Length: 107
Image (cartoon, rainbow, N blue to C red; front, side):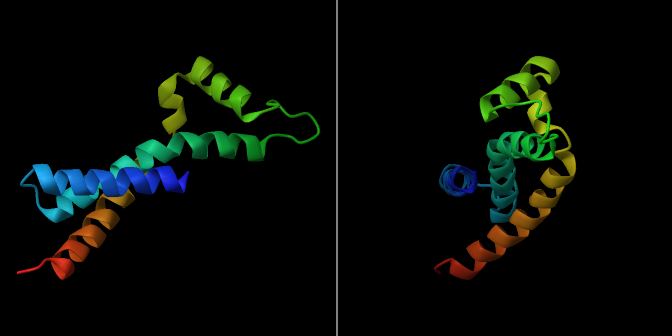
């Protein structure tokens, strides 16, 4: 999950820096959102699998859990409760990658 997320984060940051005139902090914020949009579905499925009753599990496999969420809650069900996480990353990655860019920028 993290490998995919970080690939999205750094690719998004690099592409935004290369093809836009957005400030580094904004590029960082958008990159953080890309990280979580790519990894939150895996977290939601993982959480559902971990919290089910082990004596009578609702889902036998990850695929069954994923299918259940999409069929009963739609694709947005994979992002249930994501607003606080996205708000946190907008600030955190904006500051972090903005500072990184400022410190590594060559004159």
